[in-house]
Length: 350
Image (cartoon, rainbow, N blue to C red):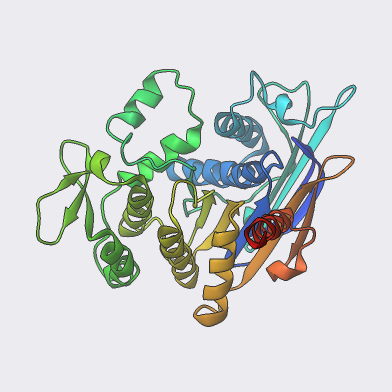
C-alpha cells in the first residue's frame, strides 16, 4: 500500500507531501489543480514495478529502473516529447524530485529528472523487489465499449490515448476468479449486480455484455453510460483485480452519473476498502464527497480515510490534508456549492 508521495517541482506543484490512509483517500479540487497528476504518478511507478515483476526473475537494478520509470511515466502522462516536460515550468532549468514510500519499505523508491531529460531518470533510492500486485486505474470514461481489439490496436499503432486505458483493458479481459476466493468476490459483486440487474460477461467475440437474470444478453453499447461504469467496477472485482490487495486509482468516478448511481459508486468504493484494497479518488463532486462521509459514519467506520484539498496559491498549487473532510482548508468546492444555494434562495424568496 502507498504510504506517502513527496514531489518537488512536478507539473503544477512547487512542493507537495501527501500521506495516505490504508483505506479511502479523496483528492478534491477545481479543474486544473493537478488532481489527476497525483493519481497517475504513483500509478505509473507501481504499474511499472508490477509489470517488470511479471516478466523478470532478477532483482531491480538502477540501470533498468532509470529507463523503465521514465518510459512508463511518459506513456501514462503523454508529455510532448520527453519526461523533462513534466518538470514544473519556470525560468531556466528545473529539476523534479519524486519519492514514494510504501507500507513495505522494500517497495519504496525515489528518483529525479531535469527539464532537459529525455528518456531517463536518476535513481536516488532503488526498490529492492518488484511488486506482486497490480494497481488499477479507472479514467473518467468507461472502457467496456472500446475494449474489443483495443489492446492489440494500441500495441501496434500510435494512438493518442494514455497507457492507463491499455492497462485497464488488459485487466478487464482477465479470466474471472474461481476457487476459495470466489466467495469473497460474490459478496462484493452482489449489490453491484443487483443494481445492474445482471452479470457482466465477456463473450468469445471479444465484446462485453450485460446478462440480465431472465433475459438475453444486452450489448454493452446499449447500456446507459452510468451503468457501464458500475459494470466496469463489477468486472474488475470478478477477475480478482480489486480483491484483498493492490490499489485502485479512480479519476472523477462521478462523471456522467446521476445522484442515485453516485450513491452506488460511493458504497462500492467503501466495500472495496473494507476488502483490503487501498482506494485513491479524485473528484470535484460535493454529492460524492457527502455520500462518502455519510456512509463512513453510518456503515464503514473501520475504514481509514484521508482527504486532500487542492487550490491555486501564489507560487503554484497547494495542498491541505486531514483525516476528516472538515479538517481540510480551504475546500473551494464546498464554498461554491454554498454560494449557489445562497443565490438560489435569494432569487426564490423574491
